[in-house]
Length: 507
Image (cartoon, rainbow, N blue to C red):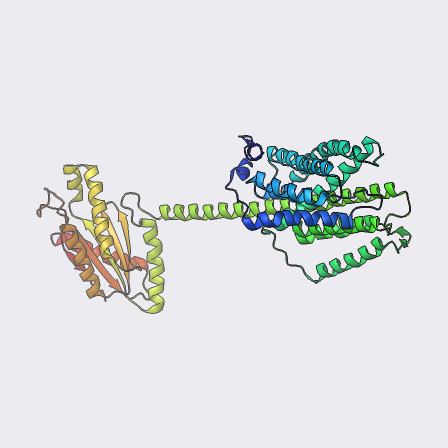
């Protein structure tokens, strides 16, 4: 039995198959203890509320207990769960039926649940019955096929009881309708409360008022004391709008509870003679009660599942939009970084340099702080390229960019490639002495690379650096600082290269 339930292979192309293949929760010893107790209590609850004086069962609840357990645990230890509930069934049936019939009724109930579970698993119905297609599949697998198969067997067992004279088709229909409705209203309820709810429910005062009104209205209707209101007969069908309200406001869990409570209350009212559906033959009133419970369950739970699916789709869509937005922002950020980065050296490009220089100029102007600019040119770089090739030239520029980056230690400093073999460094709030020290460190760092350059008198790659430091004022522009640094670089070249020159007028 266990293997047949647990090893039903789901279709390989089903996207939902992972739900059934996921790691299963194994029933604990406490769950194994409580399961037969819940099953036995459900038997007693059925006898107390849903059995008519003519011994017609309006709704049979216990079979839903095992079905909900199999679905919740994904068939894990199915043989143990089945044995426990079968034992409970025997304990409940033996005082009522002869031993042979009690054993056969237990097997009949077990077969109903196993057929239903196998069909649900084959159809990949969600173990929580929360998808939009699940209620229809559940209705066909359980109340229709499983309960019908059980009733065909139960009808034969009932015919073997002494004193039973009803025709076989009548016995089949009575068993079928009672079992079907029990699965329909009780299974969703048990599944909903068996797991943690993912639907946050925060009832407001209108919701509480509606619940109180529903209880009061149900009490009047089910008592059979109110015959009409403004010409409208007071029948249980008037409770349907209240259940729809709960489906909209309170979600599947509380809708399942409302459906079960109203169904059992209606069954109790009918079996105790309150006649909520008026005067009619007893069997016809039982059928009206079952018809109402069927409609109530399908409309209430169907609408609740539809809204749950809609909310889940909305959450999924919001998550996807959030993910796509984040990915787009990251892409834009990377694109922005690429558009501001020199492709060869990895440092800022001319465009980024122009933006930062303009911003730092305005900031220094507001704060009355100095702004330093270092402009570096690689000495005899054209001759280096001609002698060693462009690939070696690119490698040399990358190493020099790294030297400048390593010496620009402050977060506010910016190293950029100005063009060709020219580099610039913006150093906010740095005076002339510190700017010259920084430039000397960079010049020495370039020489320390010991990059061979035979055309140079030094024999290695060197750099000339022009330094300009100004306090921005209203009469100056960023171009003033650029021209001063460029002029200082020109003088460094004229003085023999491999040196640092401070621009005239630097602070």
